Length: 222
Image (cartoon, rainbow, N blue to C red):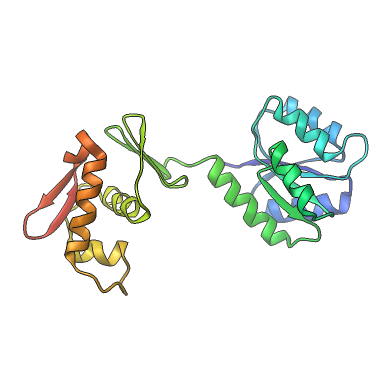
């Protein structure tokens, strides 16, 4: 999927700089030179996935533009500003800014922020998996069982994620320990057994998906 990004800045040179870097990453880029033009383009193009919005612009500034956008849309917005003052950033977040970058900035950092924000906002099918009502959202680090979110610690989440990534495969305790706790972890299999017990309890009726493989370890049954 080619994401479409609207770049809004009254400086043509700045728009071109941002567009060149985004286009190199195969993003589709639209441009607007002021807030009103941005609103017109956004309202007529439902395919816009993200907006990069400058604050200081003629006709309609960034703050006013963002207010109008937020009346009808939660499209991800990265705000650009030359001010860099804390109160301005707080004001922006109150209005619904997702990311905040002060000028001057590194175009490569901006692109990285764009990619990260799009990944959070539009998780792919690989990032959200459903196993018989057990929904694992890797980006948000959330697990839902039959629509109800369950509270997992970081290691419990990583353990369940690893088991489901290898669904149907019998995994030894050593392999699980090395993959989830890393190779430099000096623990023993009781650590895994303890965490498996906790995860099963939290999965409730769905706990039967985690099978014990006698003499080896565990397997997530599809």
